[in-house]
Structures are given as C-alpha cells and as structure tokens.
Image 1 (spheres, one colour):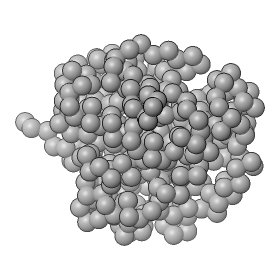
Image 2: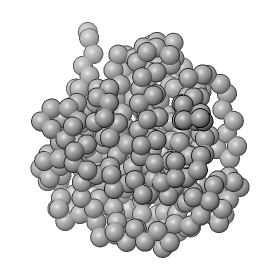
Image 3: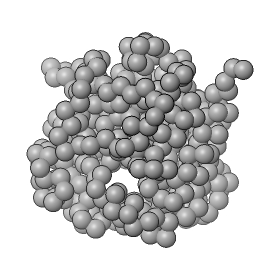
Image 4: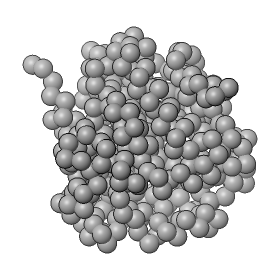
Length: 334
C-alpha cells in the first residue's frame, strides 16, 4: 500500500469527505494480481481525536464510494466520523478511480482478495500511521455479499453490517436477470461513455436505476437525480459470480456479530419469505437460519425505504440504528 494523490478523471468525491474535524487521507492500495498489480483508490477519514475501530465501506453494483457520501444529512461517512469511528471509503475494483481490468477478472473472488489485503493493511499499521484494533465491514447489496464471503474465508474482521441483502429475492429480482432489459454497455451510456471502460462493463439504462434502487414514496426528486449522477458500473464477472454470495455455507461460517438492515420496499430482496420486510422480527426469524449462533444476529427494517438506503429520507434513521449497534458491539472504555 502506498499513499498517493488520486487521479480521478470523471470521478468527484462526495462533499461529505470535506467535513471539519476530520483527518482525511487519500490512499492507493497496490494489490498483487498474478503478473499484474491492481490499484484500489480509497479515502481514510479519522476523527481528530483518533479511533480504535475502522469501518470498511463496500458499495454495491453500479456504485462507487460516493454511495456513502451523499450530500448533507445523507452522508453516512460524516455521520460515523462524528460518532468517533474511522471510515475507509473504497472504490471497488473496476469502479471510480480504481483499476479497470478485463471484466471477467472483476468478480467475487478478486473482490474478496482485495478486501482481505486491505483489512490486513489496516491491522498492521500500514494505513493512517496506526494499527486499528477492530475492523467492521459495512456492505451494501453486492458489497454485503463480498463482506460475508471475505469474513467466512479469512475470519479477519470483528463485525459485519449487511445492508440491502437477504437470502431471499423478489420476482422483480428474477426479471433483472434479463440483463439486456435493464443494463447496457458502459460505452453506450450518455453519462459514462467517456470512461472508456472495457466492453465487459455495464450500467443501468437511463430510467431503470430508479425502478431498481429507489422507493418513489420515500425519496425526494433531487436525491433521485443525484442517484443517477453517481451511477457507476458492474461487470459480467460480477454478475456471473453474484449467486455465489447467497450460499449459506458462507454466512454460516461467520462467527462475529452481524447486523442486517433492509428497506421495507426493497425491490430486490423484500420478498414474501420475509413478509415483504414488514417487520424486523420477520426478517431476523428468516435470516437466523443462514447464520451461525456466534453471529448474534440483529435485524432492522427501515420503513418507507427502497434498496439503496443512503438516498432515502430515512437515511438518518438507518445511520442512527447502525451507530447504536456498533456502539453496543464495540463498547468504549471509560
């Protein structure tokens, strides 16, 4: 890992990263990949007083780190830094300012190896000039799946926050499987064509993003427009490896505390199996069978919210309960 300025191109970091009272460090992790080296762009935010616990934030498909830095009160990273946590914002491999290898190489296994490398660096003291004693990984959607598989394979994190992902899907999710109805090559997208991404990189067609990721009754029009502006990419490799993230042998191998947060109106995961995510109890009862007892599973449903929790009016509620759970999971010495 080396520290270097980011060469962002079309990417612009969210305004929340400029919050006062925060030590901000732009990073590039250099991850060996056979004969190649992948460069993973990141941003470390640490409260001025320091922090023992760092949250590694993993966005889902067609998002980069900007998912966690939506302006104003929607900024997850700023909320958590104010609460005394360090956060590491990542552009997943293939997104933002990170390397864009062939799309087949951007898949679950490569993401897991990248996250494991980064967690090791955080624990060793190579990041931010100190070793973090506790690492929590916070995922959204596919990012949650990466977090689960990495924790299962390497047993190197202290807690997981799984958002926008359950072990059950909706009928709409199955329709999304018809890739050409919802996605097109990045080179054909009016917003992202200038990225020059490889041919195996996809994004949502204009107008499809809101239907997949938002609940119209719970989001302001300007936030829906912002959600379109921060659109990023997905790859064929990610799509082909996505089903692997739902395998129960991974979640059952996780023995650290797990928090699940899902929107009541998640178009992809609020299925009949969980009473259409009507209550936290129904979600926990369903998901409990997919986790080991050591996960000490807790689940919350956010009312009036769709798949992407950080862009809905209820974002602050989601952050408050996540912070409360982290505070209880990692009690601070007095």
